Image 1 (tube, rainbow, N blue to C red):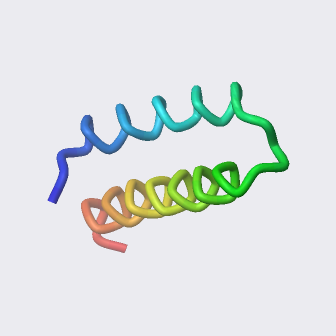
Image 2 (cartoon, rainbow, N blue to C red):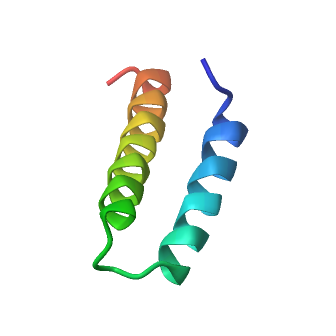
Length: 52
C-alpha cells in the first residue's frame, strides 16, 4: 500500500498532466479515471482512520 504522501504526490502530478492534455484524447479519459481512483483511495483512507 502506498503512503498518503505518495498518493497525494501522484494525484498532484496527474492533475498537472490533465491541465496540459488535450481533453479529447483517450489519454484524458485514463487520467480522469486514475485521478478519481486516487481521490477515492485517499477519501477511504481518511474515513477508515476516523472510524466511519
